[in-house]
Image 1 (spheres, rainbow, N blue to C red):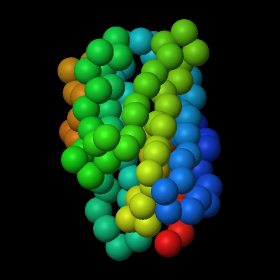
Image 2 (image 1 turned 120 degrees about the vertical axis):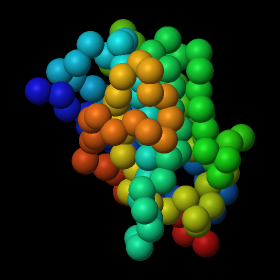
Image 3 (image 1 turned 135 degrees about the vertical axis):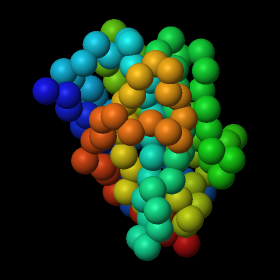
Length: 122
């Protein structure tokens, strides 16, 4: 059974930082593309970032490029999202995602975590 468990969400002031982590189990982690999505109240799910199986092809939404960094550790089966210079518009539930090595970006939809809340105060 595939499980993705996010952690690291919380409340932070504008301009602050948070680091989200996702621990995966039940899959051969190194064979999967990994990513992060988010959903704000009243809005559709939004792609945030993705990373290839080998970690060499990070892909970011324009809204977070330069502020967020995605990374993975295949030995630990984890993927992280370092979020810097946070803005109120970053407030959302953040979800970890896993999919085929061939899908690295907004089309990822195979497996999902339960989400972790990030709130940025203004």
